[in-house]
Length: 138
Length: 400
Ligand SMILES: [Zn+2]
Image (cartoon, rainbow over all chains, first blue to last red; front, side, top):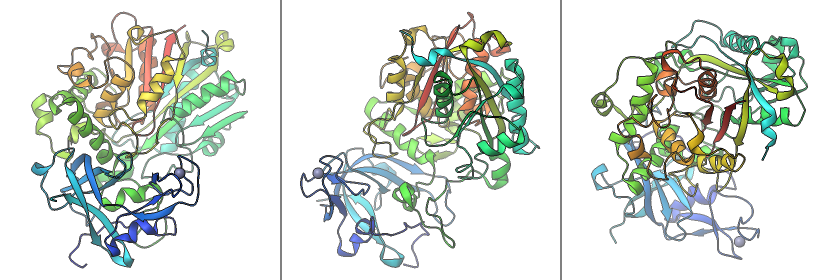
């Protein structure tokens, strides 16, 4: 991990652990309502659609679509050097569920809004796996 | 149709020195603006019975120089005797604090509410340059990201510049908007700032200057981002029944918009190209018989250039998605155009007074005190709109 850039990492608790540690098993995990199958993100205790509870953490396909992006050039965080690509992606399971993330293994010139993406993980301290996305070649 | 807010008027405005930096205690800047507004209204301190501010004391230290004093500090400094007061960031954008004051007056909780907003980001950020915003995670050592910030900070999305840039990029994608079009928000602001002696950046800016500026977060370059300053802005809002006690012809609050719909989130909001502005503007127009074509001047938040473009669309000055062609060339939004925009120079060139500067300028224009930048034709209806992303609020002002 020593050659990775500095990142501000999330504070892990029972409500968000599934999301930030699922990468250990290679899984992008989100909460889902067992009753109506609504995917719920960010985490909350009850289903916003049917008001059912509890919600359960389940693996998604990890496949997503590029909704929008920016190439950041400004050094906001010491140790995390620009340029880097920030993106909002929509999950293929439900395009209303979005994640803000980084795109990796691609260049600005490769980016097309609507392009298919697949999750990959960056392993960090304390069992945290950051879900990043790369072009989906399959 | 008479909405409750039409019983409320703007009775006075005030502004401290504004600069990069101003060599004066930020609390004293607040006093300068507040006392100027009270005097402008023809009132005295003892007549002020309400106080409102954004973001209030609790969030005043959210980032360096973000505020100076909450309600209790200013109440104490000016020894005000209050019946009603409110300071919060959890409201319909920066001008949500003013909308709450309107509600308090309409409800009869107060007669004269003083509203203030103070920033000292120029002094606080010093030569270190602009920073991202707080982590939300608290704790010592290397901070961790908590709350809603955890979904963006680990990916280096540390500033609203990045979040709003992605909204602009989506607008570019859906509607074919270009940087050459977006530029006109910045170029128009600079043109107007040249006519405003209190503006920060007054030198001419060309399209080439804009296109050649360094990128911050694509498609935003340096000139798409507002300029941190030190300064304070204040208003007095009064009940219309007090009008005979006032020095000025009061300005009526014709309608307010404060709607919060959809998912109030920087990335989950259903349409990133409109943001929450869409719903705040829609609500405002449902509360008045006036229409966009009745508006003589629009003061719209431009913390980032794209937000002002999105406000123009939300408010109905052009159709959704047509903001790019609408502003291109700058004629329609110029001082003599269809809808003069950000006549003081906006936050891009006149300084980041964080929402309150737009309301101040709307009043200046309606009172005909814009000097060289005065909109011709004796404007009678103005909009002040602030906020961006998941937050937005707007007020329609009319000469009574
Ligand atoms: Zn459900």
